[in-house]
Image (cartoon, rainbow, N blue to C red; front, side, top):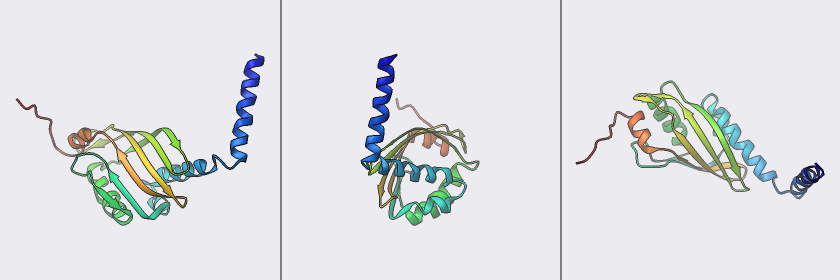
Length: 161
């Protein structure tokens, strides 16, 4: 019991020491920015767009029809305004399962739940975001491009003989 109390106390002291030294505050702020981004992107995109750096770049990673790069303007007008409503007409539920951050990067693992134009689209994602000046400057979204192609578009898997 005594060892457990000492261990807990040591963890508490080391945590406060890191926070007092200024370490951790950038990481915590980055998590808050990205959490706010995700809380608002589908319901109040103006809030999320204000969190993007003027030089923002987004890339839906993989080899698929919608896998390409977007800048801040096309992320809002094309990706959010056209692509997502076309392939996910009923929207998507985003469940954040893990958050990792340092002073420059935030990485989330996410489970998505949706019905796409060609069936259930329950993809798993890794969202990699680079931060600059307290804003998101780069966002790479990794997922199963095979699932994206077969569920978001009417493509089929064909065995080659």
